[in-house]
Length: 123
Image 1 (cartoon, rainbow, N blue to C red):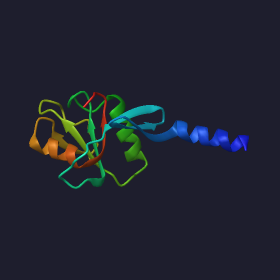
Image 2 (image 1 turned 135 degrees about the vertical axis):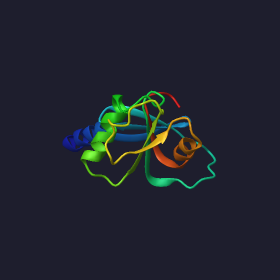
Image 3 (image 1 turned 135 degrees about the horizontal axis):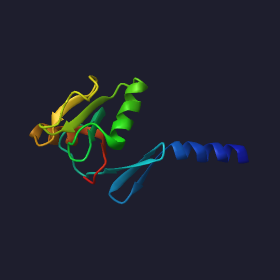
């Protein structure tokens, strides 16, 4: 019984999902990701869409980069959207990532219909 408890604790350390007020907290490999839960949505959520944001559109880097890279390495069937500013070089991004302008209506639509939002800033 003690061995199973250690295994469960280890799996929770790798991945866990729980609620904290108006946020859903996801932990993946020790990284804490806060997802704001909205009460009313008018658009249908795309179950396989993940939207990434690095420092309000400042390129491909930091923790969101490594989370996205791991998803790509595992060849998971997610639609990955990255919000970037116009002046940022798009050459660093893998071709599997769809890019959207950070300051556009399309970016708002992508955020509203995403199942998961990964950001290193509070949204």
